[in-house]
Length: 501
Image 1 (tube, rainbow, N blue to C red):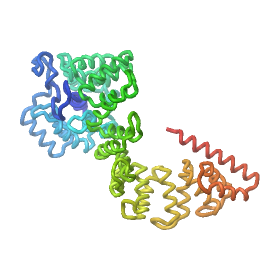
Image 2: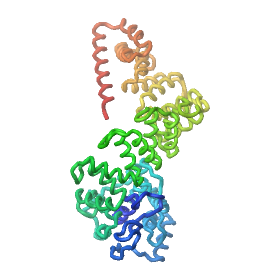
Image 3: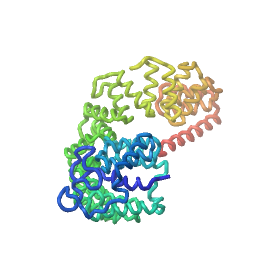
Image 4: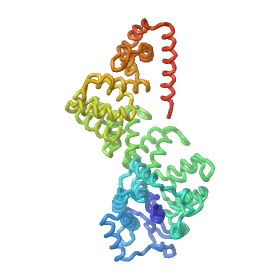
């Protein structure tokens, strides 16, 4: 059952990523009542601001809650994490809060997974990591975290909590204003109203709340709740980026490079991208490495590419681990090192990156950077092949024909070549055609031999044309017409499959 109390409190904790002004560290300025929010003098308390009904938990009750959390009770771990995030009865500590969220999230508590995702999204108590955020959001969503669908069923205490957030917002708390805007966007505890959300974002943004400034930029760009206005979108984006809000820095960098809503400025654009990547998001680091590799927006720079790939790879991003492995295997931007290349290839392969699985399988077949091991090679090739990777299917067929691993198996080779051939793998088409022509691993069939060899020849596979012509001499005119028609059907089917999303 979804705990809406903690979901709503979490809006205060996690939806708002930073206090007014640049973020200095993971634990600074978190939760309602922190510096920069109250109206009046900076940092002054606001005696008129409302307090939630649950505030002011006693020391004894808090001690019991902490004890329950330490004993492994997921609900208590999440609740104690919220106390750490707010600084209710304990020192405010975003790192400690995220640690408790994680413990509860790993016990499959949906609300905790949702909170932990928000922390990763905003770099709140943990390193900024969009991929981890997406992973935990996905886990929460799988369990039915659907606030818009469930809004009407919120019990009265949760409605009161939204009223408390609204009270803070009315008293000028910038963070609460931004949270209230999110409540309107999601329809959490109040009717969904994007125009109203924009109003609250603007009030928070005017006080310097970076996340609200970024949200307001997105609204103006997309025309959500306000007319589309590129100039205002850029203006708010610049303000959020100037406060080191990473998502704004990345978005502003791309706009500068593309000249979207502003004159093109390559130097400024690259500077913003680097600043965003330096905040630690692995995906941005990987993308920046790709720009360096391709010479996109900048001169090609293999050294910088390898640098950013390594940054992202160290955080566990499989795409980056694979790119770093390629750099190390070929000595591009780094000293050539087959052993380290194999290590990074394995890390990416273990996360399901198919290209890395194929490469690791071939490395074990050849003893390149690893000790030669046919059984290990077959295992990695089979994992990728069973997932549908056509290159793996081709190589697995070759390994079966050559007797790697479990011994020679021509029929198994044909099975994998057929799967790869049907996806357009031309080498597999050639081998499949030869198998039909020779009756190896499958009954001889000159029509199918001609079909697959003709397709391979059309892709320029060496020896495919000569083998096809040899088979042609065994066909009647009627068989040739049948073969040509079948080849056209298969070719059209391959093209159709390649164009599917």
